[in-house]
Image (tube, rainbow, N blue to C red; front, top):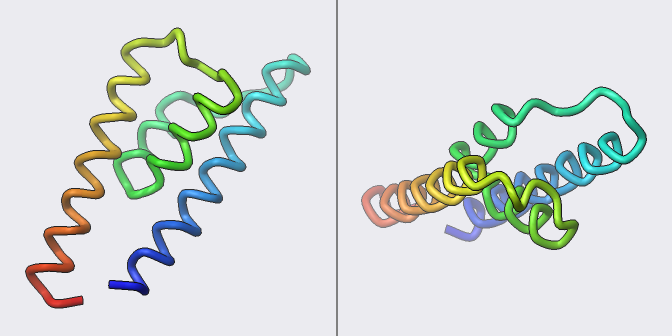
Length: 90
């Protein structure tokens, strides 16, 4: 279980950095990360990093649909991870 948590923590940290870079690119008028990528990260286990960046940096917090998808993806991916750890004894 500790290995899974460490992997998810590192993946979330990488997602936080990627989202922060997107915020920086937005301020500078540069090429941005697609919102689909943020949703993908949320559904694949890095949702806490994406959501933490959204709220800490006030980035995309007015995009209700995007926030809802990211929240749903985060909850679903972590529920699946917990289920897998319990089911397979990881």
